[in-house]
Image (cartoon, rainbow, N blue to C red; front, top):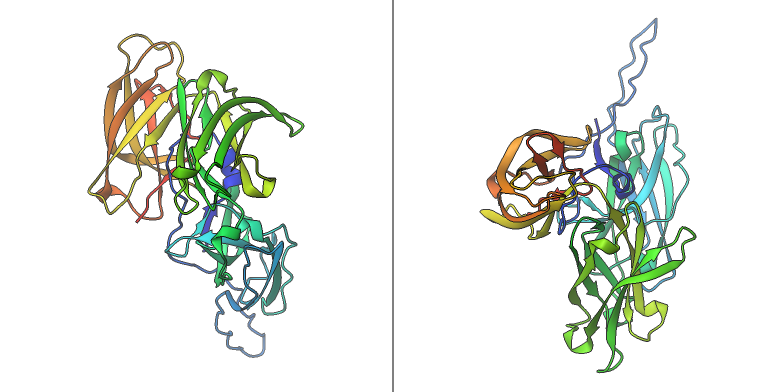
Length: 386
């Protein structure tokens, strides 16, 4: 057996429920190894089988320099199963405090690993400095792509060192929550958290712009803007809530969010893609879920249902999400019923998430359904933090 996790790319096209403010996705803490082929007994005598060798990375060379154009990391290891037909790949991921992968592979695409007689391997990874955040941690992962639904098996991993860097010289970057915009929401509130935005003078500001992305990749009409004054930047960081009217969002359409120092060069800003969704949804709009809190009080909003009548009841359920089956599984961990508004079933309510029923490393969703019939789609997961 080996452990699996799902990539962001696999999630992008999935039919799922949106949970905003969710943190990155951790895995289970245990590594497991693929089965090794045993030796074949001779017809004349029995030869003892060699001890099973666990897959491992035994040597790592190179450091990640956030200011370098490109970084080269080399690893050597052994113990991979040569009978795996789809092969293995070396990737670079951000890791959380438990050493679990977060986000997506930041290394440039590489060829399948070539294995030696005993499963030995050498790999060279190339990582752009602009993708490295010195305030985070990274590791090399040896994976396969044989899992279902975009899952990848993890066979071995090793941490990578980061070169100390002057933060004022780093290219700005930001994160958003959520990454999905809903056509049926009167107001899509997108929380933007930026870092390394250092104003060149007291009059400088951070300009925020959301535009539709054309099929040719070019920018379309601007649909939302925002500004962060220099006085609001604390050590180059800020948090800003951008409001986007649902009436300006198109289903199955990508949008480009640009956040840059006003009047600066492209090196003084960053961009990100958001996605327009026109189906039913239930989304956490405010709050984080943590096992360290006795009760997590979050706000849940939803809508996008069809032909909803006045007084219709919406049933909300917190459930674990089964990655392999790609659907919610098991009994409800918490429930609530709310009255929704016609004609699309819009609602907003507080929802209590019981920390004692959550497990670290697992994913959860909040479903919204009307009389057990029409059920919200799933577009993003929520993951428990320590």
